[in-house]
Length: 488
Ligand SMILES: Nc1ncnc2c1ncn2[C@@H]1O[C@H](COP(=O)(O)OP(=O)(O)OP(=O)(O)O)[C@@H](O)[C@H]1O
Image (cartoon, rainbow, N blue to C red; front, side):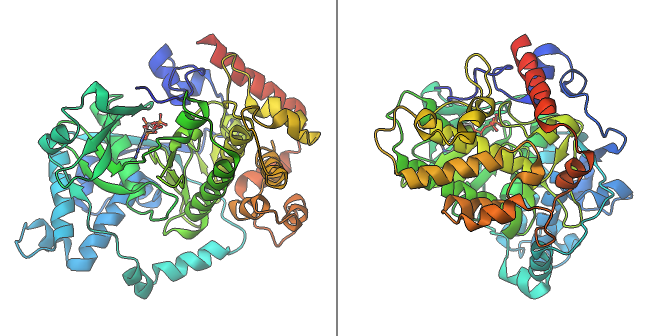
């Protein structure tokens, strides 16, 4: 069963990055001839770097947002728990389980005989944040040795053999397939101990690209631990790249909102809005690393038995070092219908990129419509005039027989602010969460973003400085966006 994804968008997976696969053209040249390309540096990273030998590449050291950096960091953390890296590579019997675990992982990766497995498109971001943030303070606290001891990385992930994964999934049978994304097929599996899992098998791209996606996703997911993020159980690198996750019995939000199943009632939608906001707030401000997800959408929100939302698919996620205001990409990835204007115009990635996508997700919850419909109509463009008029009746999903009008109003005003063209006017996730809960007082401070008490992101400052004609430019951009989607 194919997951109900953005099949209406082209290419079929809806990913901006898939244009090259469909057309042979690079998304950069075709889709987004965006601004700041000078600063972009493509930094090749060799697999041998995973030996944790010191790198002589200045850029590699600087770009700690790279998946390699994150995985390395993870391994380093595990090594520092147990002693030197030399000792840990010796294969000593006395090694703690976690170390064996990761070295097994890297041995297997090397076994796949990849030389250079990843180029990532990152820019060095020269401008620095103006002032110390709450998060910086928090991060300093978290990075202190005492605190690190309090947050040990969980050493319990299992390295599955291919035959274990085959047995669990009935040899990856079609009946066991529960989802399909732009990068992977996902199979339901039952482990030997009876535990139900979802096994994400990376299928798209060259083996190097698959390894890159795999490391990127794994590098992030090992660092996150929150009720509203997907739970990692293990991985497998024999016979392809596999990520083993806790199974979400209801599948993704997209499959429930847009699939043939019974429609979600309002109280569940409201719960999903709050839980997703909590998960994003955690990624942006509270987890060990400042993480920008970059692909928030209904297909990437899984639902537990109790309909608690869990953010999944960290394949595009970026870890931004604290002192960076933003990140600039030259390779555009993400999903049409959810892309923030500053991202597709300038390639700028920061927290507000996720806030915009979250706003689109809220509009999906309110209206039951897709981010881009079958005729490639943008949900944001359709909803904006109705949000401005506060037209609840027209906006609310006709399949909703009943809803709490007050909650609906909170979600509407949050969606409206989160999808503002100017990132300056979008709330941060902490503010969005307050808005969703009905704290209207936050509205004033959200609108008065020039107040020094509100920390501003790089994209906010950029847009503020440019002072361009927001409405006209936005409509042009969106129509260009729509045109591109129609061409394929
Ligand atoms: N843990 C899980 N439990 C149940 N279903 C899952 C789970 N993980 C993924 N799925 C299903 O598989 C689909 C694809 O998964 P995922 O988004 O991780 O793949 P992907 O190829 O990385 O997708 P994308 O194109 O968004 O990058 C999800 O939308 C969901 O329907």
